[in-house]
Image (tube, rainbow, N blue to C red; front, side):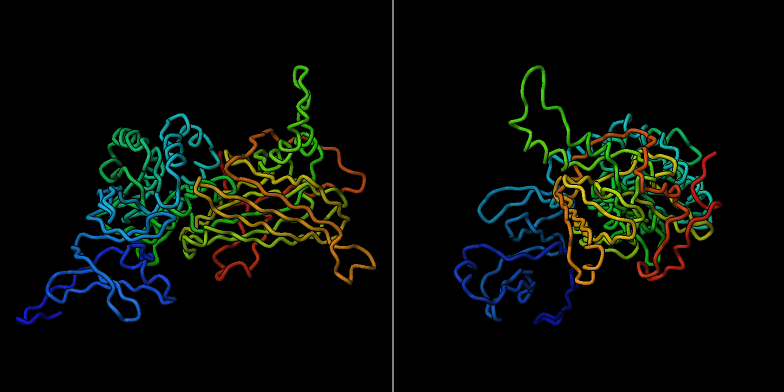
Length: 497
């Protein structure tokens, strides 16, 4: 832009987090107008100013330094704030002082974040994950077998924890690894990495959230273990996606690159009775006055355990999440239509779920699965149990919906419904014979975690073939590039000696 003296001013850029409707007194007087307020930066007199307009008419404005300013959406009550930098203290129009927030802070309530980072800041919990040899061994194999992807490349480890994945990347020949960890575990990671001097010179530990930290260079590869129960619990996948948008070069690789949530109806009379018939008499005290409320609470908890795959009533379907393409906001609400064909006649007690992820290396494609019948991981599987079972016959269609809505406690509220269509001559009319639904909180599971046990089959039930990760089909309609997702074979699946 030119001023009256003919001197050219360099155009300054600023970080835009959000522009929201303002509630200042100067704007509220015209709030009855249906037109929206537009915010524009200008420098007519050589002084940068943020101005607000409605229908091309100037309403209000104030001076800012756009070289050091950022705009923020301040929680549920929409407003606009200008700050010198992330982490700075800012003065609001009413004189109150508040600390500016990162993208993570807007989504997650402080108490949940505090507990989350405290949990992962303890060596005991990191040790539990490291000793999940299916998990850790698969990551190691995926990295080392794909040295061609890591050699001479810059890597960012998102949520590095103990730093083990950073060390794997350095072993594979990475030029430099940035290990980003927000919890106190970052200090332990520094000690562990320093104790491996041959690798330490190529690893930098950065304590902070990926939503906030700045890196010296872009990454060729992102590596992370962002999976929670049912893949999405803890909402770390969103941080993984934010790191992709902030740090990954175009066409860079992500380890893992794709996740799939697998679902199938199940029948488990033992589990249903266990949940439904909780203790009603306690040391001579009758607990039945609270039974109605407690009954619903029991069924609001997804069950985390390892179960026999023969309990599945039909082949599974899967919902694919492509980490290379998905947007952060797409994970705020996940809607999955369900449609199955019952393989046996039985009572359906709910929906069983598990996940797997793909490491799409240039040399080797490797899957990490949590499927029933596969080696057990610390994720186990989960089952959503309905308070009212439905009855099905072999060959009968089961339809429904799994609708998950993210909440600020770093998890999801789950709404599940299953229906059995009418069977017999009246089926051509398409009526619904029976429907069952439930609301569950993925944040509050029932950790049953028993090992699979033998179950007596119903008279009309036929034992299904054990479900193997290798037998899970990938439907081409789920992916734009199905050829990238060849089904894992006996030679490429996770194998630990």
